[in-house]
Amino acid sequence: MSVYALEKLISETRRLATEFRRTTGQMLPVTGEIARFDAARQLDLELLEPRAPGVDATGKDDRKGRRYQIKGRVILDEGKAGYRIGQLNPNGDWTHVALVLLDGEFEPYKIYEADREEILATLSQSSGKRSKRGAMSVAKFEAIGQLIWTRENGLEDGIWSNY
Image (tube, rainbow, N blue to C red):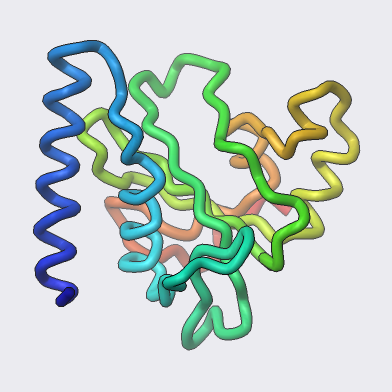
């Protein structure tokens, strides 16, 4: 399948998912695939097919050698607390996690990146069943990660690092 055809399919998926949510109040389970597409496109990553355990994409150019686990989350109300990202696979062969934040129309508006050591250290410091399963809040990920892309500015120059 050509990149153009995939881009058209993702665009139509965004439209359908938005209409489905508006009509039913429920989310279609497409956020992960949209996030994978957006991360690859905006960060110039190569998606792996078939996927390796815990690895969705590999880096090119400045990100060469990095293996990414990609997570996505639709944020309907930025003022609301409690948004969580999907379970991280701590046993996967990834070096970084990219978190793609999507608006209510499933369009990306921010992408954060965090490295494996920082994520695993944060999960090990947290108590509770969620952290043991590799779960983390969006707010925690934003705090330990680095904002690397925004809808307004594109790729960032590392000025938003929280390290």
